[in-house]
Amino acid sequence: MEEKEKILKTKLVEALNLLKEAVEISLGTKATGTDEQRKVNELWSLFLQEFFGYIKKRSRETKQNLLAGIRFPRF
Image (cartoon, rainbow, N blue to C red; front, side):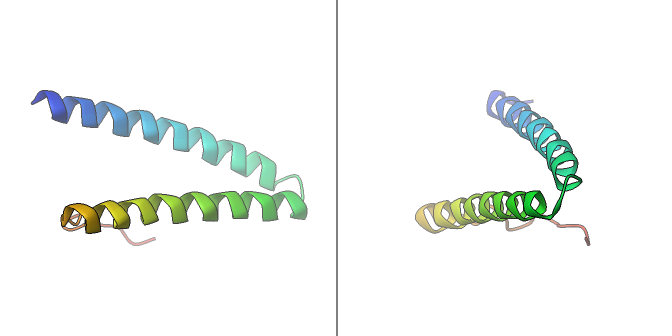
């Protein structure tokens, strides 16, 4: 495995682990009440907007569609 590929794999595993922690915190927080549910929803919405917005921005800048060829399983 190439060095850049190893680094990418490590970073993605680290990111996934952090996201799993965030999901668990979110589930615990959402269970406490409606105001907390709204706040958690807002945080996740902001995160996803920022994340996909950054991918879109960098794809335009580099003229490389990062999401091309990536399959998203049905939700």
